[in-house]
Length: 281
Ligand SMILES: Nc1ncnc2c1ncn2[C@@H]1O[C@H](COP(=O)(O)OP(=O)(O)OP(=O)(O)O)[C@@H](O)[C@H]1O
Ligand SMILES: NC(=O)c1ccc[n+]([C@@H]2O[C@H](COP(=O)(O)O)[C@@H](O)[C@H]2O)c1
Image (cartoon, rainbow, N blue to C red; front, side):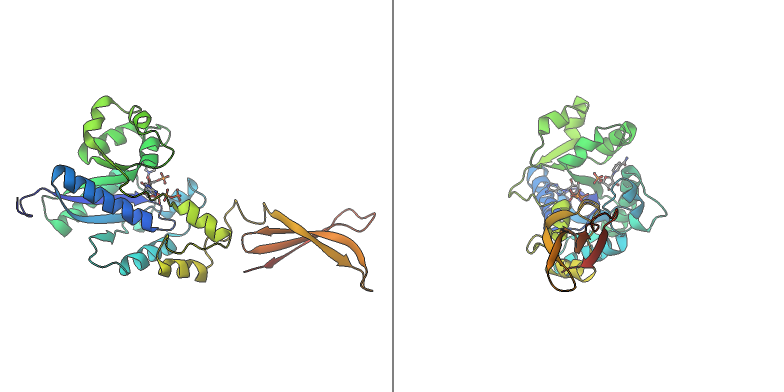
């Protein structure tokens, strides 16, 4: 069948992208491969839609969309023959929009970009599908609308029992859900990138070099609540010297993200010690 006669599909990937990693791009690539090979549709484009800053009420690690959008742009700028693009509609709204609204708007945009017959499909990981079964998080009416109107391309992730997740939904939803096998295992999550960065470890080859440099330059992900000095790790002790140079005690040395804290206990008889923090590379 000619390219033009095959039905046209655009893929939409919603999420935090905090930051975008190569895995997010692989998720889209594998979704495109799967749907092209199993149903012969023509995937004409893909949109990456970062969530609004207001979503930080749900995820306290979410950083400003100014940075998240910039990092998506940097990553996409280095790809050749790109069928995927950033769609920043969500972050430009006055507040968070539920995914059904996002998809409705994406449909309008995709029709302008790719033609009036294009169909939108939502791509997500199995973790997101599992959350969709939680009525505290997702309105079941919304979920039904999304599943039936758009259809889902769902990626496997380690640690999830796919069948158990699917059983949380009505049986007839199954026909609207395409499971995407991991042709090559890519398990990197943004959480891991933030954690590596917070510990001062390399993130190279897991995301774009330009993004790694951007993170470093803007000192992002260095003080997440979990690894800030509010919850420091004790890394050792240092001697306290008298003015004459003799050792008179020990101070506790603790390390948070990018900070070194030294706690000096109170002198004998005193009630409060001293805490001093300094930045470390
Ligand atoms: N390793 C992965 N395998 C399959 N799907 C993934 C993977 N990483 C992310 N996704 C999917 O990509 C979409 C956007 O991801 P998002 O940035 O919100 O989550 P994340 O990378 O898991 O981030 P975080 O670790 O901050 O929760 C979601 O649907 C998510 O399930
Ligand atoms: N009711 C809803 O439409 C709803 C609820 C929770 C998350 N989401 C979306 O899911 C995406 C991923 O969020 P999580 O990373 O919290 O799973 C985000 O784009 C977010 O906006 C939508």
